Length: 625
Image (cartoon, rainbow, N blue to C red; front, side):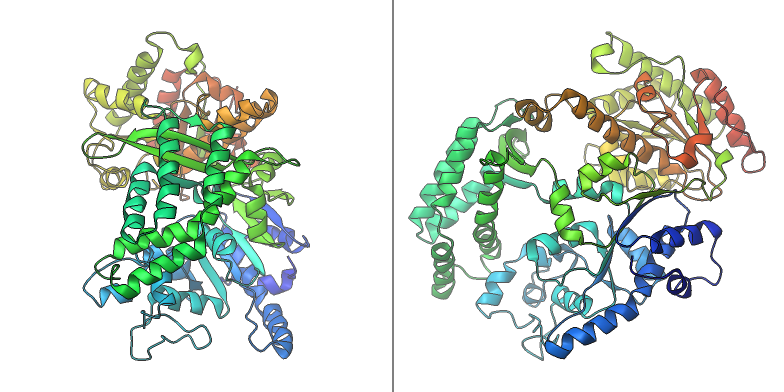
């Protein structure tokens, strides 16, 4: 990583360093370019990473002086620390006040509209259009860092961006880093990138670079194009809307991959769009008063998005067709869903990358420190993220491993859909709730994680029969609201899907010392990605191996929600027999001593209660024999 161990130790944020942290720094500094670290929660990976970024400061400063000797306008190459959530960014900023923090536009108010009595976030306004028209006095001049009107309040987003570009360590969300690097492209190439929670990187990138187009948005665009007398583009998008609506299945939620002929038809339509012509129409409408930046703020925002995204739509659709050298790299599919209040259907076209490894590689540069507790198989991690550096695996957890259990019961059924009989799921739900009732009788609460909302609904309906107060979301209650209520002590059991509760939540201090994972997270064979793989004739063996890797990673993420401090006791019961395809081979080295696979479910409940009642004073050695 182009730093020495001595330099990193000098920059370590604490007077004392633990042996395992020094081992990590030794491994990092011995690696010339990039490295991936798999290490458990509590290891102090953030302190290690910050010492590396701090140690690069002197070298970066000298490189900048050398570049400014020939180019006075040169800016420093940023050192990035990226993490998935804003909450994690704030935690790092609190511990390291010297860092520069930057978020996406949605986290900043727009000074232009606030001054006009419209409290809007910066991502909800036609910012680029206002700046091109020189309407916004709050915009920051890059050379000075001051607003265009020295007496105006500076734009909060652009001011934060200017400060972040001025040097130092930049801490941000993974999504902002990827967007800035690959879409905005107005930052210097990174000097060093730390990618925390790197196991989530591919999922974040896939969501970020997916394009969504709805029929309701197209109808708004049509109305606006007619309003500014742009008949040419109105005809184009009317045809686009017709293709989307004709292709979309009327069955709610059923996705259909676009046929190549349909994708080509959309490409040919967008190739007839003329960005300069559309842009000039918008400028003319603003000058003539047809579009007022205050009265028609939302309309201008829609048109601005359209002019900026036409080329993006076109590029993504071309990747969905492929060329003579390579097959399709994107998948384009459509589905209908009831999103409107009156129950009518919304048709949605989605164009998403099948793989994001190339995009991630292009963003992160040559010097990357990736960190996670759940890297798993390095080959598949590299295939999904593009980060193919050597993986250094930590062998021991800093938390007492006798406070952790990974249970696979010997008397539970296979909950794969193909293996279920009529009442298999019902019986599993009843049995799990009975176990939770036994835990609650001993004063312990639980988190149950399902793979589908239908499974979650089974638990919601049957919890009262087990005498349990169950907390979940739906009917106006968000997943975050449900979690907050549970953390504050309400309810006996929290139930939710993996999509809501596998990552991003902490349940320390015995809030929910028991987690029950119903079954592994395998893809639906009818979802668009599976359809795409079938159409591309991808090997079933390779497809299943990748599915197993993703399912293992998801299961470990679920399992880690309640083991967040040295005092925590974390017990996970992987219920379905399917989990035996994943474990123990998928366990990190430091978690292997916690694996128990020879108990019945009743024995597990009794053993777990003994552990919970005794902790932290009575260590009980885990054993699979």
